[in-house]
Amino acid sequence: VLLAGDAAGLADAASGEGIRAAVESGQLAADTILAAGGVYSSDRLTPYAAALADRYGHRVPEGASRFVPQPFRRAVAPALMRSRWFARHVLLDAWFLKAG
Ligand SMILES: Cc1cc2nc3c(=O)[nH]c(=O)nc-3n(C[C@H](O)[C@H](O)[C@H](O)COP(=O)(O)OP(=O)(O)OC[C@H]3O[C@@H](n4cnc5c(N)ncnc54)[C@H](O)[C@@H]3O)c2cc1C
Image 1 (cartoon, protein in one colour):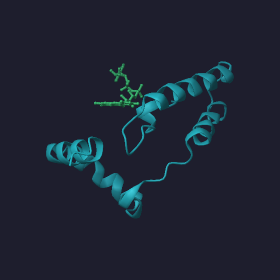
Image 2: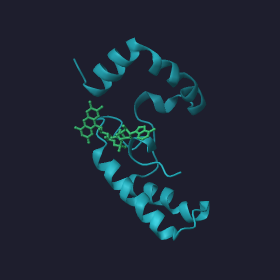
Image 3: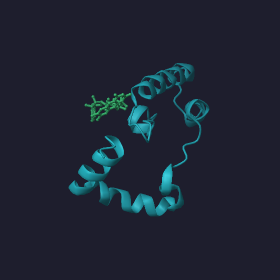
Image 4: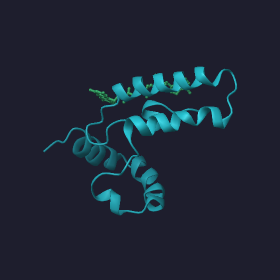
């Protein structure tokens, strides 16, 4: 499976813009698939990960979240995203729309 765009987490963490990254990563994925020549083994598809890292770098969490260990973030994030209050006031208003 090759993840592109939002599925690959490529949208800009600060602005939420992800159209360009979705198009570009889709093209990189298509290039990788064509280059695999019909043999979709992991060694033929791994160059896609390298191409993404080359284009976007290795993602480093921004802000205070970089001080929170990844396993803890993975455990807590789903619960936060299920919270209507968090989605409305933090995710949408504060992080995405930067209201106030
Ligand atoms: C309100 C809002 C405003 C935004 N404004 C901007 C902006 O100004 N500039 C910018 O660059 N980005 C913006 N973005 C982000 C941008 O829309 C996304 O980063 C971009 O669309 C990601 O493209 P994608 O192809 O990865 O995913 P998507 O565009 O989400 O495409 C995924 C597609 O897969 C389909 N799908 C899902 N599940 C299945 C399934 N099981 N089977 C078949 N199809 C399925 C969905 O219906 C959808 O059509 C905005 C996002 C939002 C929500």
